[in-house]
Length: 358
Image (cartoon, rainbow, N blue to C red; front, side, top):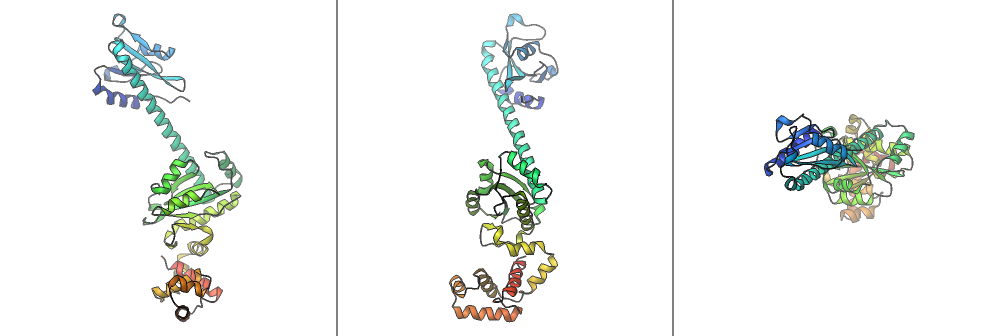
């Protein structure tokens, strides 16, 4: 499809090049009407030579001896895009002198038209990706149509899939007020790879990718100040929508995410997801259960829960003697009235640690 030639772009070119030329420049549309000119009084008038050039697709040369009907000596060169004439460039002066200049102007306009068309195409693709991902995360897309859209889009993603969300560690404020993540190693990778469907909204850069293709994203996130939330591999659209909703809850509460890693897997964030989904009053009650613990006790409790109750592993991680770890756990149970060695009570303590990150 031929790109349209607008008067604004044409006049921008004329205004930019006119100071460097000693010749009048006109730009005409495909009908031969002057839409941009160094001489403003000529805009809107018909140029017969340009009309002929547009109709034949060949340059029209006007010699001094053939000047007529307001046409002065010069050349009129058609502007072709995708095999169709979209306009004509006219330069006044000795034809042998201005023909090379007209060729340069024609090339300039063609390049600008191609750039604008490419930008329009990019904007359209980004809008489609944004709409698709927003429906996916907000649960507004039937599974059947979603699968068709993913398989037929650009790039095609027939599945299995994985959804990721990238957050800026330094951003502050509610998600709706945080700037979208587009810069840095992750944003650069997404922009140039062409393998992902992505969009920035709700304070995160959302990325839909083939399930097996998460390695490059993880590496890029590790080299940046961002945190990558990586969903599980999904073989069906229902599981993909479920993962999307879970990631949405976490993106809305980034303050509860652990700060120990740049790459966080959804399967390892069950406690964080539970706190993100519960009312803030409930989360506040859980946080109050550990409010009287010291920083050292909290560190010990977190290490013990992460180690699955292994005293030797906690001792290794904290560089603390086994007996010291046992004494701290006993004191934690005394202060909180919850025993970290009891699986059910340990879950409450885990949720309390997460809720206390706020």
